Length: 67
Image (cartoon, rainbow, N blue to C red; front, side, top):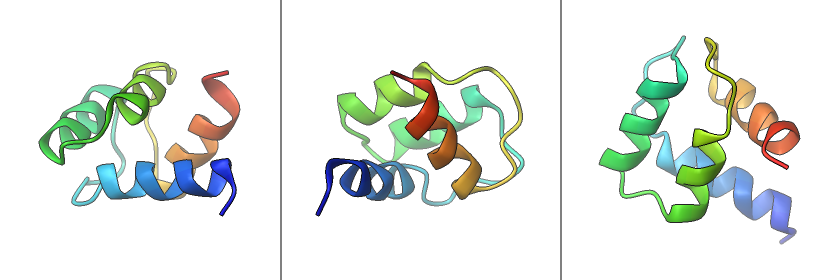
């Protein structure tokens, strides 16, 4: 499994139960409630503060943004 695939899976696990559209602060809250690891929390914290329409939109932003 590639690093990006593993990261995608971890982000999706961390956001289980999130309601969309969601802003960054809501995503961080959900991830914390799901005991996301520090790497996932840092990736989500680095996202732009905007509305995300779906889990795929979050994963795309994580994959392209926090680098």
